[in-house]
Length: 184
Image 1 (tube, rainbow, N blue to C red):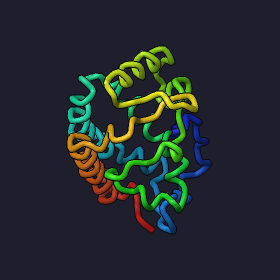
Image 2 (image 1 turned 180 degrees about the horizontal axis):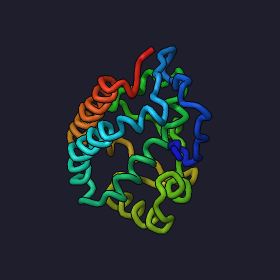
Image 3 (image 1 turned 180 degrees about the vertical axis):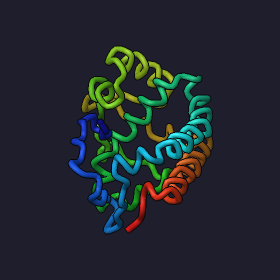
Image 4 (image 1 turned 120 degrees about the horizontal axis):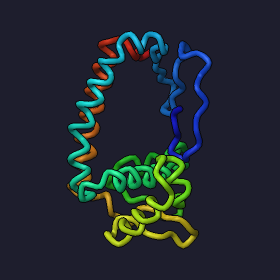
């Protein structure tokens, strides 16, 4: 079952024939049905494996080869800005170079992160404390945690983000070529 950043499971669609709704305007993607996907699933799995092999080492080095910390960092960052990114007023914050003010971020607690990542809550708590000690995450005065301002606005993170973008576009391109996804 798919998960959203807020940790709430999404309901599987009755049919995957319907175009996927897009948060980004009128653009729609037609996603292959489960049967169509199954017929070409190795293409996706291969491309996704290549993607992971390209991007995980870059992020992993920044997290001292601790993939649980990496997962927690991404889940926390996404949950902190989930509400902002769903609003039309997000435009000034679309660049990673721009810091999002704390009042526009929603702190997240260890339980929410555990729910969204599938990691045990105690592991999440321990890793959050390590991320706080490393100066990447901070406790929010409203409760919960959020990314420390400027923590991901580094050249190393920008390089990792761009490498991720390129690797994911290769997956998307392969899915387009295999007709697993079509832009309508």
